[in-house]
Amino acid sequence: MKIRATLLSVNRDLNMQFVNNNNISNTEVINNAITYYNVYNATDIKFEVKPYGIRKYITVHNNTAPRNFTFKIVTNVLNATFKEKSLIFNTTIGNLRSFFIDRPYGYYTYTINDTDTNGGVSRILTITRTIDLEYELRRDETGLYLDLNVKTPYEDVVFPLTIDPSVLSVNT
Image (cartoon, rainbow, N blue to C red; front, side, top):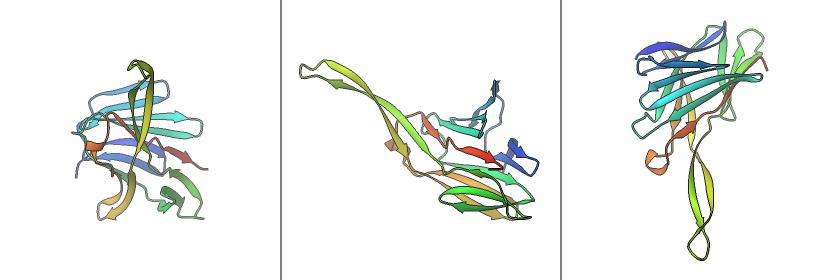
């Protein structure tokens, strides 16, 4: 199992790392956002700091991208549990919520031409469709891992996909 780089340091008690990814050679920082390009095959990941937490965007560009993304969670002081498909991290002392990762969400958009009775284009419609995603939390002798799994077949979507625009809320 390869771990290439620390993806995100949420606070002194928790780090998330890319697992089984490409070499990270191209990143871009603009204002409050950092984008990792081609961190997985045909996949970019962007993190943007917001007043209410950190917004994460995974962009899948084509069907050569993986369907499962793994992040190693490095922590010694937090317990992880699921509640309503969201991942919640509580402190080991006092069981206070330290932060959570919202349930995964994903979508793609495409356009269609709406024609009038004469066959002419009367309007262009933009359609958004959601995709099925799920988190899986697992622990083994090497650590704690969060797997993000794309359940919708890539043959059934239009690229690019936007996956998991979740917010990591700290101390809420």
